[in-house]
Length: 251
Ligand SMILES: [Zn+2]
Image (cartoon, rainbow, N blue to C red; front, side, top):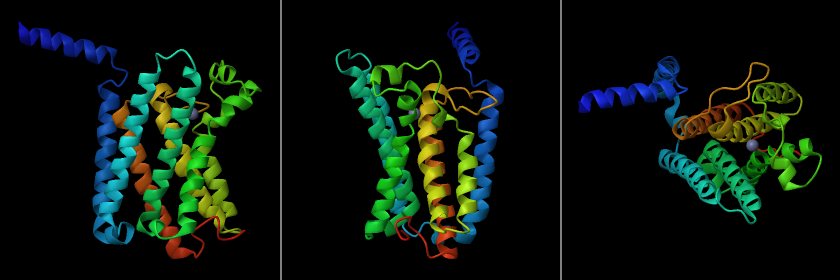
């Protein structure tokens, strides 16, 4: 009897779960492919990419904790009426900025601890990550927070499919102005981490194809951590091919 109750509960859960068995299998396959790729690459360049693995592990753990803490505080603030909008907006933007900063800190690695320019990169990434939500005010045509939070449609900076286009364009410009290659990686790290975190509530907006299902916390946090590691590898590649490792170097 107990078993049957368990089976019917499980069946109910599967029916209400937007991530049906197909999508779950896809996620598992993606993880498996990623692990195989990483395994193949690890033997070659692991030390070159992550010369301070404990620091990388610490930053990735901190990144996950900041995401969880931000979400927890937002849930706690959801019942507050007076000044609730301001508190939620400040908490959400601070979490986005912290996540953007930590993703870039992983990309910088241990070098960022001792160099002022690297810290400026980290701060700039935090600013970029928080700036995505400015489109709420642009779409509302007003600085009124209530209007900005109650839009009919999602505003344009939240179109995830624009990110690869902007990254590609900046990378091409980078052949003429090398600092733009660093900027393109920063843009990818900050904006995609923002979009992945927002996907916890509304999915990714892959215009013109529509929205993905909402990402559970564990999925979006995992993807942000993977993003930070991928950006680190790309950044290492850039550092070995160019002397421009900061957008603050050439101005
Ligand atoms: Zn947002």
